[in-house]
Every structure is written in C-alpha cells, then in structure tokens.
Image 1 (spheres, rainbow, N blue to C red):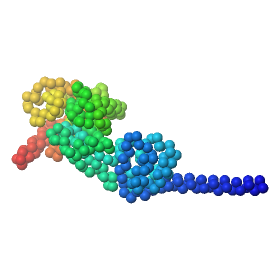
Image 2: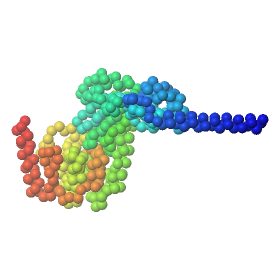
Image 3: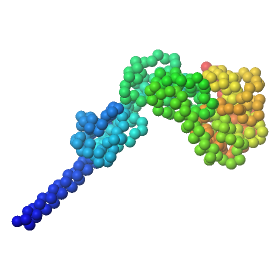
Image 4: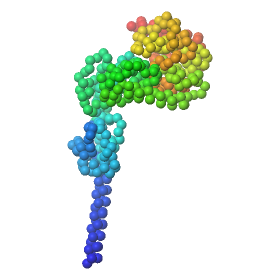
Length: 385
C-alpha cells in the first residue's frame, strides 16, 4: 500500500512540476511577447509611485493584459526598485519586458511637455512643445522672446505641469557674460551669480535644467564639460602648432568660432591663423576688435570704425602681435578641434564670398581681387535695397 501511495505521490509531484514549469514558461512568454497596445501612449509615473500603480495605469491604457505578470516580471528581473519618475513614451505593441526597461532605465523623459530656452548671440528664445506619442514628433505650443515678449498663457500652464521638463541650449560663439545674464533671467532657475565666468570656459551645448536649480550649478556643469572637451582635443592635437598651452588653443578656437559659421570651413579658417602665427604676421581679425570694445557684454550692432581698428586694446589683433590674452567667446567642440587640427594649407588671407562662406588666398594680389569682388556684391545688395 505504501508503495502505491508513494507512486501516486510521485506522479502528483511530477504533474505539479510540469504545471509549474508550464506556468512559468507561459508567464515568461506573456512577459516577453508583443503587447496589445495599438497606438503609442505617454505614461506618467509620478514621484513616489510603484510598479503596482504603473501596472494599473498600463491596464487602463490597454498596454498590458495582466498586471500580475507585469509585477512578477519586474520583481523577477530585479527592477521593481529601479522605477523612475517621469513621462515615458510606450511604443505600440511594446512587451511588458520592454515597458519595465523603459520606466527603469533612467535618463531624460521621452515624452510629455518640454520647455527649451535657446540662448543665442542676439537674443534668448523660449520654445514650448509637446510630444505627440502617436507620431513621436514634437508639436509646438508656443514660442517667444524671453526678454521682449510677454509670457504666453501656454507657458504659464506648462510651468505648472508636473511632467514638464526643461532644457537650455547654448549657441556656439555666445560670450560668458551673455550666458550668465540669460540664465539669470530665466524664471525656472535661481539667480545666484554676480560675476561673469572666464571667457571661453563654458561649453555651448544642451543641458537639462531642474526647476529651482541655482544658475551657478548650471554654469559649473558647463565648465566641467568645456574642460573635458578641451583636454581631449589637446591630447589629440596635431604636431608643430604655434600653441603652447590648452588656454592658447581655446583663444584661437574662439576666433575661429566667430569668423565662420560654416562647418566645412572651420579647419581652413584655423589654418589661416596658424599660418599667420607661424610667419609672425598679425592675425588682423575683426571679431577680436569688437570684443575689445564690448568686452563680451552685448552685441556691437554696427560696423567697425577705422579709429576702432587702430585703437590699442589687448584684443585688437590689428595692433597686437600674436593671440589676444583671452578667448573672445565660448567656442564649441568643432571649433576647438579645428584649432588643434587645422587643414594643411598655404592660406594667409580670407574674405566673405557672398554665399555665407569665404574666399581664401595665399597672396595679397589674389586676396585683393577677392576683396574687390566682395565689395561689388555688397554694392549690388545695397542697390537692391
């Protein structure tokens, strides 16, 4: 009898084991298979939420069929404790496994409302936009000048939203004073800076902002980024450059940045200044003269006068020998790399060519012809109104 009971028990355990294994296999398949979501959604995960609440939201939105499998899968993958607050785009047919990864991987929000402050040379623009999860494209809600325009109602509304994210984008060639001033004027940040950071020390890139964050903290991030960019570029610099320190490279890069906005020209422009330095020629570049007048505080807004070209300032490269004592703006990565790896050319002159770019020359005669052609273009434009 005991042998019969043991045999039945063994059979029962075997069947139970198969059922458990089958259930696990079925659950794993459900967790990893494409989900039922027909159209992408924006999933809001508030601070302090948990996987159970997220699972309930997903069921309501038709993204998962079983909240239990979702929670068990998150626990089994040891990601339940890694849930991040934010706004996340869940794509169509996303599996439960993919959704768990989306809400736990961290990083910037992938949907919701976004405010972008664009600090440029002449003004600071504010763009308010919202991601359409169905198309995965941003739709503009409002756009205005941060200084001259009144705040639109749409901006006030998104500023109250918990899912709104903020970003500042710094244009290449903006001065440190312009950056510090513009950031201090943003109502999303805490103004706590009364001194201008060293010129050239701030990396012109995009940065996430946290509401109430001190301006000094944002500037510190920009400084750290620029230091890293400069150090890497200096490490990979070409041989034989007339630059003794990374700081001199930053000065040259800032001049290149202000002289051309054409990406393909940066290394050519850099070659002109490197050739001039090697030959003991003055750099004779207008942006340095302008910086000597404005000190980077605002835009000159007019052409240079002959008296200003002759005036002795530490930055007037028509007067001084070699490089000016400081950068004249904050150069971007591309200009820093161009200054430290210029093209190999014999160019020592360049002038605007009317297309947005420049005409380069190796001798004064050719340069004078290029200048004459540029004067003709200017005259034609003036006559056309």
